[in-house]
Image 1 (cartoon, rainbow, N blue to C red):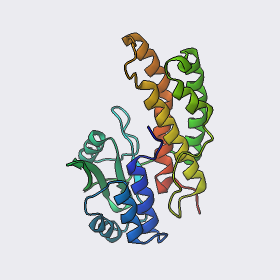
Image 2 (image 1 turned 180 degrees about the vertical axis):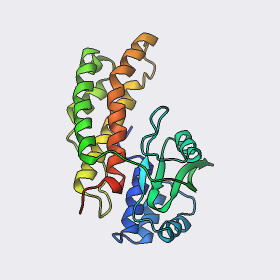
Image 3 (image 1 turned 180 degrees about the horizontal axis):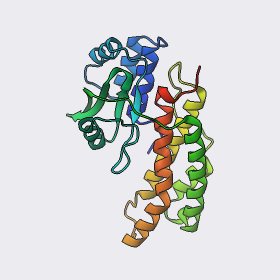
Image 4 (image 1 turned 90 degrees about the vertical axis):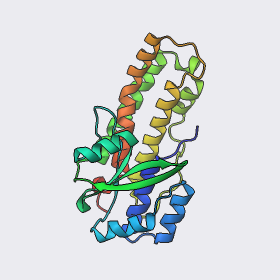
Length: 232
């Protein structure tokens, strides 16, 4: 399992870079094709610019935590079902993922402005969650049942992502890398892959990982939402 930014985050970065004049449309479309994203992005880019969008950010909602969403309920439901969404709240547009024949298509919907985590706050929360979770996993003897998780926790400084497009603040690129690494740790630790684990052990493990799961989503939303970025 490789460490990478969620597709929604990459789409948000590249689309924002185009809207702000840092890249040309062909660069955006090439990047999206590399990710396997289809769905008429030339028309979507034109719609975003015509609506006055100056940036596109991500939402990573889960049940009970509509992180990065501002409504309306119909769009929130689509985003929750998809697991991620793009929001250009100033333009009143939202995009949600639809999987068709192993390809990802993005569909338009009405979306309202939203609030997103502050970059500094998300960074501090992620650092705290990593420490807390590392201690909890050590108590659960993580190195025995998931040595690759221990390896990830010991090697958090290693670069985890491809360089972002121009215009993404370095602090946000670094935060995105940390959020992606944290999400990978959670996924690895929750993957039993043939191991004999009781229901009670799974619940204890899940409780230990929940703070890091939340912090990783907050970090990714802050890092991939231009309305949260520090002034350039």
